[in-house]
Length: 232
Ligand code: ATP
Image (tube, rainbow, N blue to C red):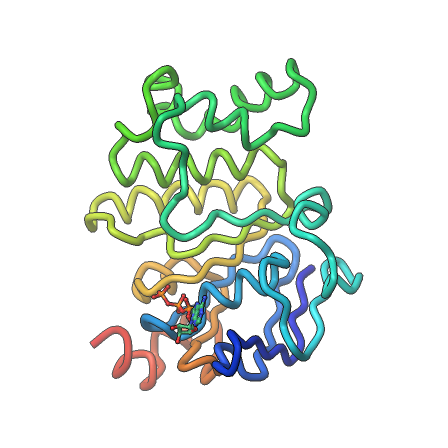
């Protein structure tokens, strides 16, 4: 479904991604783990058209998307849940959701908001509250539900565990697993290697802009590199 081939992305002279190749098959759950500054966000931004890789190709469902704009990729079925949630803190939970589907007709938007909050009852309970009053975990769930307003076939998640307590990290991952089981293809990047590996079917290890490892969940779990660098 998603095929990233040998991409390199720069910020001026700084090489943030150096010849990265990965793929995500339909219905798969794929994780990319890596430390601070490894290039995880740059990878997702490069895929989503927020930054242009200098080299390499990116294919979505077999079509080249190197020069596609972000909104075009959303309408082609790929949506990003950004790092740090990025909810609108002074808008209600419900309005945050509706904004996620602003290209839909009004009644369809309301109907979608009902649908996407089915796995997130807390968002329904607090639909009229300002999003900034939600806990970090609830805001993460809102950001995920907002992304689901676009009915993505493939959902990209940037650091879903960021800033959350272990209990909330677990809850957020449970919800992401539910979405995966309901048929959404997932590519996520996270510093929290333990959770990201537990969640995935396959995964990759990114270090200083390069992929240095890949494998199935069990291969990653038994990898010396993963243990020494990320699982301690
Ligand atoms: P984190 O978990 O801290 O977000 P990351 O793995 O997502 O880390 P990136 O944010 O992709 O890493 O950053 C990769 C490299 O690119 C880092 O060296 C970072 O300092 C650099 N970088 C990121 N954004 C910019 C920018 N706008 N300008 C210059 N350098 C940048």
